[in-house]
Length: 332
Image 1 (spheres, rainbow, N blue to C red):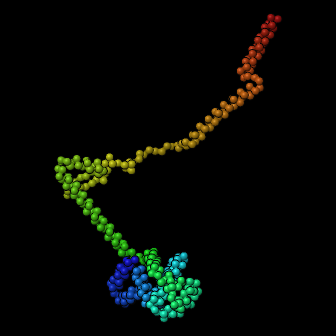
Image 2 (image 1 turned 60 degrees about the vertical axis):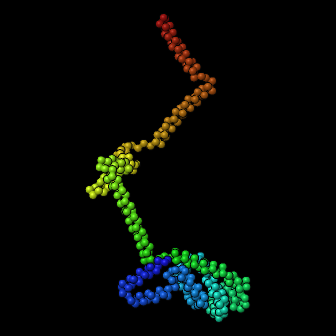
């Protein structure tokens, strides 16, 4: 977040422009005592190390309280464990530096001021023995804090933690002034570069047309049209491209649909299939009825063909009998 310094300069310039002298003095004083160091993580880490090596317990606690109130308190709940661990590690680092600097009075002051706060925390129970330990660098509970690896890991972890928070924290609108200005400048440079390239291409094409001669102007125009657009020379010698695409470059998007009216009655194909299925079903059903009647006649001992022949013979006998009786009646 180095752009914060640029925003501070903008605000300072605006205050000078408005003539707010008292506001400018207060603003400069606030910048000098800025605990966030314009949100520069390296400066914040340097300030913490300076307070530790100067054995300024009050300044260290004040700085951490400021970070807690303005940054750590706004984090989600599951980050509380990490924040507490970093704070306890910074305090232990303070004790290690005080011991290596032979500042026993600073160690005594530390436990005198913070004992009511630390006595309820389980990880500090063994550290109350620290002021009375002759060789704490050899003690199992304190030896790891004397190693350079532990101290470097603490500072790197704190640096990464603060960097992540500064990058994710919401920023005011005025803080985006520099980024938007850089974006506008970049776009302007790109536009200028594209314009120069376009002018160069147009100049090259114009030179080619002039070198080809006036007789080949129509041919060049046709060749330009086959490439997708017609080229013509204006009065000042520039090349003008027509936006009408050639027939060889037409795509499906360029084709206009014909005005074909929709059919008056919408036919449902599934309805036709259903009708065909019903007609086939009725034909099959009638065929099945014929087979059933044939089987029924066979099972009854008779034949439909023989039955028809016998019925015809009986009708003939009746006719012949009736004729004979009538003849006898006539003769009598």
